[in-house]
Length: 130
Image 1 (cartoon, rainbow, N blue to C red):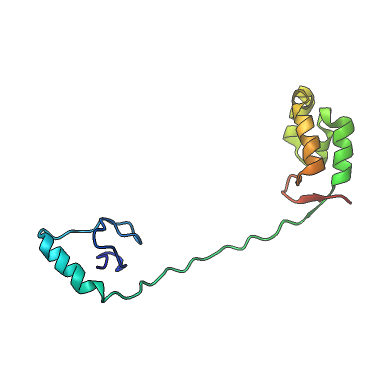
Image 2 (cartoon, rainbow, N blue to C red):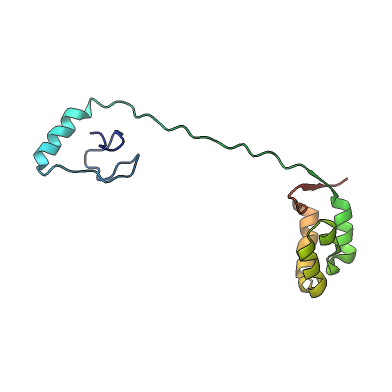
């Protein structure tokens, strides 16, 4: 049996089309439905599949900022947010300056992120060790 909306093959007792999700119409007489299923069961043709378009996202480039410099600034002056200013993150730099590195917690998270994570500058470019 085929779906009346998309023409996709459906099961005998299916109430919804697995391809388009529309509710199937059932004839008033159940005997007619069985005969219709039996007639069309062997006459199914493959359903045309929709092509999926993929968007290619360009790889992120390297930052002109140094990861080593950011790490040293974070270690020595991170409680004042100097490393944030260096990476171009001015807003959080002022936040760190006013709250002493988010009470030390933000400073520690940034330090670990610079050591073990994949830190980025304001534009989303990855920092390198050079």
